[in-house]
Amino acid sequence: MWSIYKVLVFALVSASSFTPVYVLDFCQTTDPDCHSHDSTASNTQQSQHTFKSRWNMSAANLIQDLDQFTVSCKKLMDAFPIDEVDGNFVRTVKNCIFSKSIPTPLKGPLKLAAVSKDVIEGILDLDTAVTQSDDFLHYASGGRLLPGSIPLAHRYGGHQFGYWAGQLGDGRAHSLGQYINRKGEIWELQLKGSGKTPYSRSGDGRAVIRSSVREFLCSEAMHSLGVPTSRAASLIVSEEPVFRDQFYNGNVKTERGAVVLRLAKSWFRIGSLEVLSQSGEIDLLRKLLNFVIDEHFPSINSNDPDKYLVLYTTVVNETAHLIAQWMSVGFTHGVCNTDNFSLLSITIDYGPFGFMESYDPNFIPNTSDDEGRYSIGAQANVGLFNLEKLLWALSPVLSNKQQREAKIILKGYVDIYQKRIQQIFKAKLGLLDEEEDDGYLIAFLLKMMEDTQSDFTMTFRQLSEASAEQLHNRDFTKMWALEDLSSHKHFSDWLNMYLLRLSRQPNDNDADRQDRMKTVNPRYVLRNWMAEAAIRKTEMNDFSEVEQLHRVLSFPFITQETAEEAGYAARPPLWAKRLKVSCSS
Ligand SMILES: *[C@@H]1O[C@H](CO)[C@@H](O)[C@H](O)[C@H]1NC(C)=O
Ligand SMILES: *[C@@H]1O[C@H](CO)[C@@H](O)[C@H](O)[C@H]1NC(C)=O
Ligand SMILES: *[C@@H]1O[C@H](CO)[C@@H](O)[C@H](O)[C@H]1NC(C)=O
Ligand SMILES: CC(=O)N[C@H]1CO[C@H](CO)[C@@H](O)[C@@H]1O
Image (tube, rainbow, N blue to C red):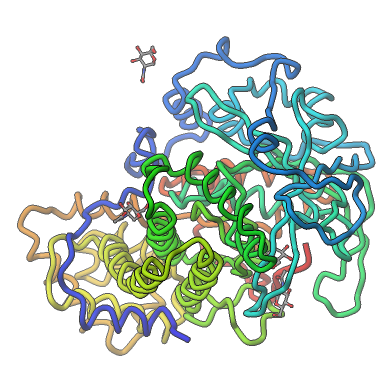
């Protein structure tokens, strides 16, 4: 297996010809505030300003009444045969893509623990005020169905930890239907933790507060970091007892059930295709592919005889880009099975994920993953594995010639990934143009970070915040990550090389470099200890910290007073080191 370090060094010694990207498009182009420069503004002012300019929509235009909010299952139901059997009992399902499945209401009292205004208003066109109603609590937790909703559970399969696992499917998620918003975008709404489905296997169909807080916060934080991801609209907690063996050590604890209302343009996965190929349902495979192409890949011509090959090419490219973006912020997914990999190449299924703190290519967020199959450094390779499985799933609808071409395309994956990684890390260092030694400069830095266990996020951030003069004078007061890094015996060599490299950028100045770097190097990421503190409070019905984290992480590139006071950019507290990720969800 590769590690990111090996991948980088490998890429960096050889690669040289590509177009450099000066400022990475980490944010939504429609989002004027995303690239705004560092400023310590008061949070409320800042978010009000941003909310307005983000949507440019007066409250009067938003839907005020939940009865007016309808979703539709028509497209999905018209496109595919639906499981003929009803009922939420576990079974093997054939010849369909979905089973009808009614959510099981959570036992009350229910409480709204968090809501994403960005999603509620910006995607769902709803006035946030409606989330304060009892109706919303029931709609968004599975107790009542939205107008038009016929809840569905999706049948899929997948390779888990390297092996074919057979039928998997939505075991605790229900698709409520699609919503087409004012911008004409199609979004599929899902509840997670809403009870058993035909695909629950031995599970209880529930999700606990712990894992739901993590999914809510992380999916929204990833969006704000500019990483393609599913979104979260709300988090509702209940008093329903749920039993979990958190560390798989026989120690079962009673936790509380929770439901996240989440959305994505589509929830189809590599495993959605694999299950059809595996069971020889080739007509249905073709139907699903045509549907996905028509609905989500408008640039692919549906009459093109090579359309499945073009789809494959697109997924290979976008998966490489997605994983490179994960690496750029130290995100480790934790369970990159083929059924947790989206066909639209967005991040889905937040489970035992983690943001790497001390730089370590072997960082593993899932403490039970002893082999390190899904360590941060292995992610690029796992992406390749999953794309191989995708190619296998597509083979029945590809001619021999197309299969040969697809294999060549797959070979190109490594190259796409490495080029992207190099662009990203150059941008993280503020490098313009191109020089032969750029790769060496990056690899050198990462090696020093590894040796000194420097914090990944804050090393890059503090390099952005330090002026060239400060760097030159090694004036790292309050820059704890750079202090750690500078203990390396080769630090001065590297620093001299870096400063010289920066001084050779004729169309640049130091302030521009800093500004540029601050738009790609976040100051705040969802560290485990931060999530943990919010989880503990949420479990006691105190939602203030979830809200605070959600707000802070919506502007990860901007220094914020509340975040500084909370220590979100400070050296992690001592207790954080002893923290184990809660794996069962
Ligand atoms: C907001 O929308 C109005 C009307 O559609 C438009 O005239 C105005 O320029 C927009 N403002 C911004 C900041 O986009
Ligand atoms: C590959 O994907 C990236 C990210 O979505 C996109 O910007 C780029 O244009 C794609 N490249 C090709 C050749 O399609
Ligand atoms: C963590 O890794 C172990 C060992 O591979 C695996 O059995 C377990 O399912 C993983 N946890 C999650 C939540 O995926
Ligand atoms: C977080 C999450 O949803 N992970 C899923 C990934 O896929 C496995 C099956 O391979 C599921 O069991 C997990 O729930």
